[in-house]
Amino acid sequence: MERLGSLMKAIVIEKFGGAEQLKEKEMPKPACGVNQVLIRIHATSVNPVDFKVRQGHMKDAADSFPLILGGDVAGTVTDAGSNVARFRAGDRIFARPRHFGTYAEYVAVDADIIARIPENLSFEEAAAIPLAAMTAWQALVDHGRLAKGQKVLIHAGAGGVGTFAIQIAKYLGAEVASTASESNEELLRSLGVDHFINYKKEDFSEILSGYDVVLDTMGGDIQRNSFKVLKAGGHLVSLVEQPDETLAKEAGVTANVFMMEPKGDQLDQLAELAAEGKLRPIIDETYPLSEQGLREAHEKSETHHTRGKLVIRVE
Image (tube, rainbow, N blue to C red; front, side, top):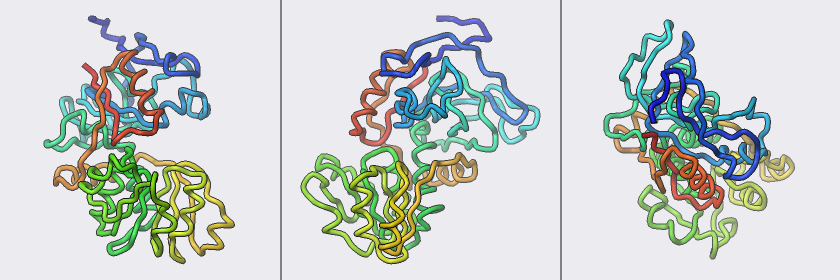
């Protein structure tokens, strides 16, 4: 339907709860700040943080209702603030905005965290990259200090972060082990995994040892058992919960949890890897920007059995 110039279609939540809380609503088109660009969104994606906020588990992340979720954007620039010289109308760009707001037709994003989409990527492929790939990069490079010739264990390698982490680790020259179900073995090996572990039949902590880095995407017992595979001086990096300091001390390793911060220079680097064919997004399913589309995508995300990313196409 045709909308007035100042309004846009968005999928919002007006209170915390199940996927049925995702509702289509007309919202004001965002204003473009002097250091921002206004993006006409062509694609976004669904990340686990989205349904966690929707359920009310991360209330600090929700400033006010109605709330537009979504933390990835790929689209074209329609307007640039007066302080922005790097981007102009028509540029194909992607980003992980500092705030939610991408389940919509437009979003305003700070120019310093935006990168150009490589020519070999579609908007859908580009939308799968920013949040998950920057999370993987920061976990392995900034926190894990992963280097050429080292060994890394990546838990849940078939997930959004996992599929990027495997490729980044191989680019860095590391030896990669990863856990997943049998149905994902072919995918993980195609991404470069050296040691595949079928978590349903094998105990990684009895098979692996002498690892430099573990990327923990699971927490709980899996995190605790991960200390067993690390060598002294190794790093356990978690995306989900603060590791046990006593276990870390006993193992002689460092362990931390972190939240990804959007960084334009890192996204530029990831875009370069994608342009060179060294980083490819794995897309499980694509859904339309609609109540039904977002509800189905959230329900799929909540199963924790997504292969790669779930992408939302904005018509």
